[in-house]
Length: 379
Image: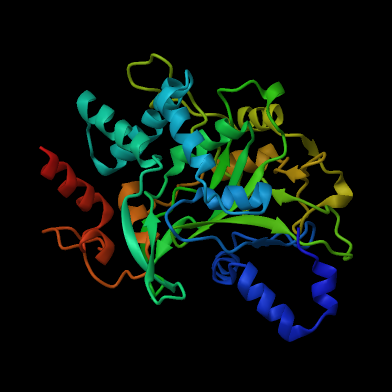
């Protein structure tokens, strides 16, 4: 929690210095311009993304949000890898992941064999390892003038966020844009991270009901925090369960297909089922009529964690009947991650026929092609 009232009254130059040092301003600006973050400030308190180390270990953001320091000892990452490797719940997460990935594959016309599915899952587990993907040289140096090194870890994907929710026994909400755009604002690829991650394989009675809040932008996670403030707001510490268009945020990996042969391809949660699932895992309550958001639509609010979601199910049903807008055709989340994890994305991947961006740290391949190169070398 940052002392907002002190910053507001203090020296503006010093305040600007602190904001630049502590806050991920570019993330804030990007998500606010996309109308994904802080569109709710008329009712709820403004949230700020904290600056986070960019070494590929997104769990720095979770550590910052909970404890106020980076996960430099890789405590969360070790726990995450152990959970995916040996937890009795790992098979349930595998099923949930396979169902969601199957839907994405179907849109892209991809079909995996059973061997390929297990290979992909093994890669998912290995990505959470504490073993660095590569070692980089930083610009920092000690007093002797020697350049210090730093490790870069595999960037994590959506299923890792779900696994982290189980490790922590706590819901996680990720605020992110829905489409990655180039410098001209043209859509490049969908961004799949945004939404609500619930520890569905844990007993709700044994879990925290106050969610961990993260922002995702530019291939980077940041902790979302509120400032202490004297300004009056209807909800002192809150975030919506809907987007600015009043659509319920997606509940990621919400369905366990169990032993169904089609892995639950046609299974979907209804709006009322989604609300019931949220109520089971978060303290969701309905905000009274005088606490409407702009537009006059009643919402669900919460107790201590103060969340809300749209209450007008009739309007939701009408919207659900509209023809959906098809997202960008590339549904390969790994390709998206490799493009967004690094900031120098002005060079195409050197693999023949690949239209995605490479990076000098992966020999000018995108992360997917680079992983394939490494696999070929091990054969």
